[in-house]
Image 1 (cartoon, helix red, strand yellow):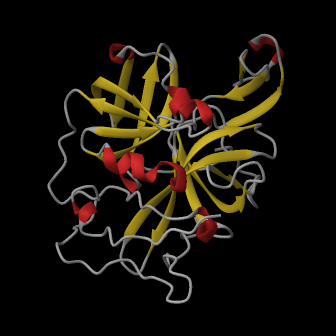
Image 2 (cartoon, rainbow, N blue to C red; image 1 turned 30 degrees about the vertical axis):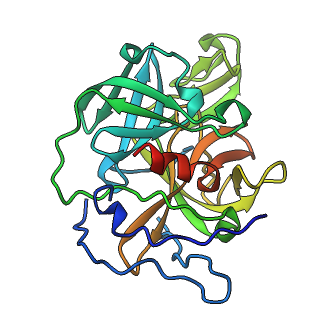
Length: 273
């Protein structure tokens, strides 16, 4: 895999980064031997996931025609999510909510290689959220996926709380579960944002575009429908920064979960920030 040297993007993202970010903050550490960024593992803490708050990583919920996905604010007016969540080309079909506040959408952007597997898109909000000038958003850095393998990340989502058996109608499901006829499986819906800690593993099909999560984790957690578009966050505790390294894209809800890797989308995101 072609290696890329991480640019010093710290100051660039002061405007895109809930903690003060001061001009002139030290850049990210770099491994002098490999040139890879040195980012500490996420703290130990989305089937049966741990409840989370939107402000932990600027998480939003995206509604479209009765369906929902998850997304991340990368500025007060732009939401990064999965391209497959953007099935409609009509901005008026979408509503984005953050901590109970709702915003309409004015523009839909999809990665130019979305149809080839880079499952990432951006929603531009009609009206920005009213955050303070020192608000920090998760950083999207240009860096190779290889440096992420084996690291632990925290992934967030507004998706289902649990998964049950197969079904054709909700009558086939246990109490509290409903049938998702797109997948012919029973799921327990929730309105709670949840998170789980997962280890990144290489994707054997194309490790330039994707990485996988080692699922289920020790707590039996795995992303479920509705978690699509949610971020996987790696924290640099040395500098108090959050790095959005992947966007939840696909999975079988049993033992497979795939994310679009920042290696494939970071440059495009930075050009559309």
